Length: 114
Length: 114
Image (tube, rainbow over the protein chains, first blue to last red):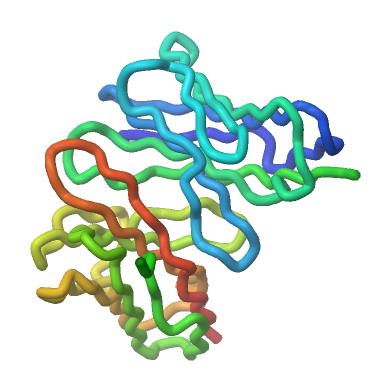
């Protein structure tokens, strides 16, 4: 069984400050890990993914995440927040078996203060 | 190139009724997955269709059923609606095959059960 825990349902940062959204996962098999962003009244957009290879993954809009197997973590960061980053962020895990259904965390709402 | 499309955008039903939601995958995609996103929560996997068959299913009752057509489009049917079925229903499409392929999400159908 797989699960995802996102620490902090709400995170507020100032514009230009570091963004850090936390994600820990549980998986009995090597995981594939993802971060998605959801803007109001829209579907999910993939920010970045880790499947194999380099553990530091760069995504769109300046976001990156590092896979740390020893800590079972996949935290999302961005050096400098922009107002347009305000949205809901979801961490998700799937396995390299089966047809790879995604298991999502409960989400973190990011607010960016001017 | 059109992305994943879903219809209708919004739907209001009463308890006990039946509902059908529709999804057209992104061009070139042959796999469709359905997710339920309750208010304030992350999406939960319902089931996945590939080659017109249900390949994987999440923890949802038999009231939830689906279908995939030869053109890869898909329907989600929910019978005997309950108040708790009120949610955003997301469709995601991907390419099948042996390696991971990104799931692209549609904008969703918001179902309200009164």
